[in-house]
Amino acid sequence: MCFVFLKKLMYTFVADAMLFWPTIEIFFLSLLLLTSSLDAASNDSQNNRDEVIVARRGAVATDDGRCSRIGMNVLREGGHAVDAAVAAALCLGVVGPGSSGIGGGGFMLIRESSGEAEFYDMRETAPLLASKDMYGGNATLKNKGGLSIAVPGELAGLDKAWKKYGKLPWKRLVKPAERLARLGFKVSPYLHFLMEKTKSEIFEDIGLRDTFTSNGSLLQKDDICYNKKLAKTLQTIAEQGIQPFYNGSIGFNLVKDIRKAGGILTIKDLRNYKVKVRKPIYANFQGLQYVTSSLPSGGPPLILVLNILALYGNLSGVPDSVFVHREIEALKHAFAVRTNLGDPDFVNVTEVLSHMLSINFAKELKQTIYDNRTFPPKHYGGK
Image (cartoon, rainbow, N blue to C red; front, top):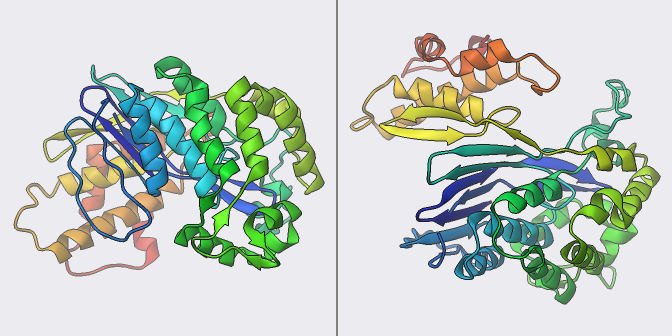
């Protein structure tokens, strides 16, 4: 997770998405960016202190302090918030490969000081050869192995946003991540947890085994991890841009490995990948206007929750337990309605989306919420 705030520029958000690299889960972490230039504050994953950081002109926060500092340095050099987002995201893909990486996708919401906003949909997409029956009823294949791998969009999305908003050279933004992969980085507690969780998969795959083990054992917390192959990939991307990934040597090797693992990705899939720029959605809550991502992200359910809670009026004086109960009940309704959504490029979701953004629909749902009880799942069926 990454936040970048700059006093007079913009707000940017990249939400979570997922892709499975040949035997290890890769999730593109939620990336939330607010945007200025000099002052910035970073969190540090190496300590567990809870603290509030106040900065005058800008801040960067990710779930790993090393990446926060990389983004902060970009801002101090006069970089744009999107510059910081690119550098921090690529860093997260190195130090947190179980939660992020160039094999995934995501969302980016950008709000400029003028109030104009754009929503970048860089989610991964299904390969052209995908079919509704390709898993043959085996749910495991959806989450693991070659058939679970979709067309990655992170690099394309970061590149597209950088080309419009970026101020610093692309190479400057990629090199910090490349250096970490090449020179090594300490294994964080969370990365070690994920390594333990996927231990059997790591030892079954020669590439993962070479990266995340030493002398026949998993790397431990604070051990130095080297990812030479990723470093080489990032070096090429730093020098040549994203073309080698989507229509060059990196892409061809990627397709070869995925096909070997039983996947169906083709170089045509990579060549045809397009980032979609969509309109964001807005809502008012407690006197503030919120801008969030539209479909296929989780923005509409969030708006529905806020609309329900807004109907309760002033929240001051409401016991915490009651507020949390109302919030949970609103979330249950939102998740129930969400099951009727789909990718707007393939499914007509106009009616469902209209309901989710409607105050009248929020009023209907609020009438089913009671402060002193909860209900079985069928109660939250939505529409």
